[in-house]
Image (cartoon, rainbow, N blue to C red; front, side, top):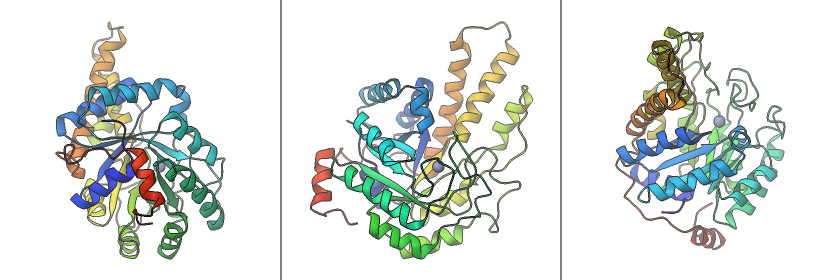
Length: 342
Ligand SMILES: [Zn+2]
């Protein structure tokens, strides 16, 4: 099937009460790993690219690899999503290229670092929603500011400095008409999320539940939600890496989130760790190897394995055949006639 909208995939996930992993990609092997995992588990999937990924892949390489993914997997609903768009122009260029969903991260200014005011965030996000919905494309917004930095994007800090205010979340969702809303509940981007196993003092699941009660029909998004498994950290370090000990978001907390309105879960660090560990291991054990395929194949396999696991844990497995793609033109009509609740 053609690339589908995020809105359709998340509406279906809400009906089925499961979550959808949104996995970041930069290259062919990562796309292959995700698609093989989706095929094996029969999962609908969100593949997402940051601004850094688009620049790394010169846009066209990445986009045509995604078209290949749809051709090779016609039975799987695939969303192609812009992760952390920093401006109207970034989102517009993604839509022109063929992305079926964009995130307008208006919580930060265009520099991707400085927090904006609430009104600035509403204004730029609403502008993107108007442009995107006319074309049937979905929009994710963000209210509150996540911690950490990834791909040069982020305010830094612990993730506790600008938590989402539930009242503002309600007003933001109403005034912008976003399809999905990223909330700041203490998570951070990058590998170094928590300095110990997170508890309620740093990971605010009670805040997430409060937001869901106020906004029961808005799809919530958890960013910075790699679990950073110990065994993946250990493999990297065993074969010459130097990662500081760190803790991610435990899978059981994500599953609690899924019970409370979380439909999209962003995962990047876990894939990076799996790939790096596999490459380090192969090259350490077989230093005579120099064909890139010798280490890229185990790297791809290692990423596939962690993605398969997450697809089962988030509940999206077995759901790829539940529905047919709604054409983007039909999505546009639905937005225009307000058949899709805002
Ligand atoms: Zn993010």
